[in-house]
Image (spheres, one colour):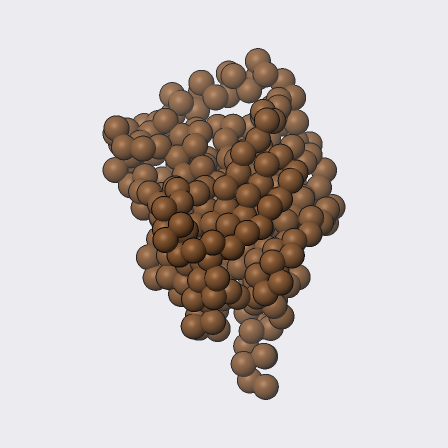
Length: 286
């Protein structure tokens, strides 16, 4: 767990080289779309594909999404998907993965604790993988069941695919387990606030709902910034847009955010979106 910084894995698809970087300046963006937009802004000239987890992914119910940001037709697209990827990124201490370049190969990326292995493989082997994250030019999934939504388009130069598998000997840690357990049980009792009903479908990692929409991704919607930074699903917005709830959850696992950090998130994310949109507009007019 990275309590005072964000750890980012950068992967160059042109060279198949990788690098970990520690970013103390990303801490204030919490996670999810906040960290994602900041990383996109910092690497905008390389047209990155950015995958982010949230600081509570895997810890609490209804908060198991990952955020995918990429450039399409001159604008940044937001997609959100569940499955296993966000929780497992948290377990190995990787807050975000930034892909640059493009590939016509089928690339498999394996993370085991802090060890990274990057290999290429045949398309038929790629198609058989049920990895924690799978990305092709027109689709993103986790374990080939949990979708990141329709309409994904990475462009004609991206003709191959990426799969990411994560394994760990680590476990999630807690600042105050008794407090965490009380919060967890309280959140379970709030399932009636969700805009979906419990079902028997496969559930995202850390979520007990198995709802009818568990296989579906979420496109950009009118969802509050705080839940999208944590990252909850859109159907749990009513639960996680509460600053006291988010603050208590973050504190229980060791994060030292203040209420003001959570209150400032909409302004910070809004400023990043304005900067990115202006930069993209200026570049297209040259």
